[in-house]
Length: 228
Image (cartoon, rainbow, N blue to C red; front, side):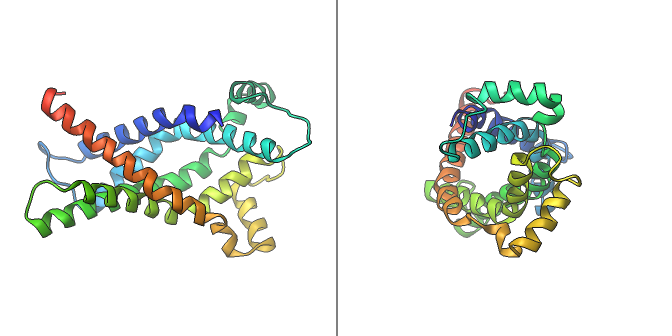
């Protein structure tokens, strides 16, 4: 699917830029070490910023996935750009950004926990070894664990978001509240974590690789562009 592939780079760029900005505005001087609450707040801010791209990107992704799964049915959208164009014609930006509140409901707490888990594991490893740096193994483990933490917190809101974003206009008049009520009545609380196994299997290696790349980039800039 082209939607998630195209969106990954800018989403992660905004996410990590938002996290860096969230940390910076809370630091009173220099590179003051932040406490757990401050790390969570900075992470949550990253979710707020990345929603600008995440919400429409996942709206398009969900619609294309539903269409792909409906074999034999007539195709309404011919790819990502066609889907975005038709959504805009149907309801303007409001249609493209449908589910933004649900996306925020997922990403504000989940991103906060995401970065908090990563930083906590990194700091725990540093205290244990008495070193200011960590090994590759620790970085990979911390990144993978952060991905697991993200989905443990964000999965319920993600399920609600996906249902809302793929439903025909007018199906859920009260938005995510209507989706939640219907899901609880029909399927019960466990439905909020339906499909979590494959997500968790993918989350660990994907986020381990993500943070490994981020740490490599940080070391590169620290070495060659220390004032960047």
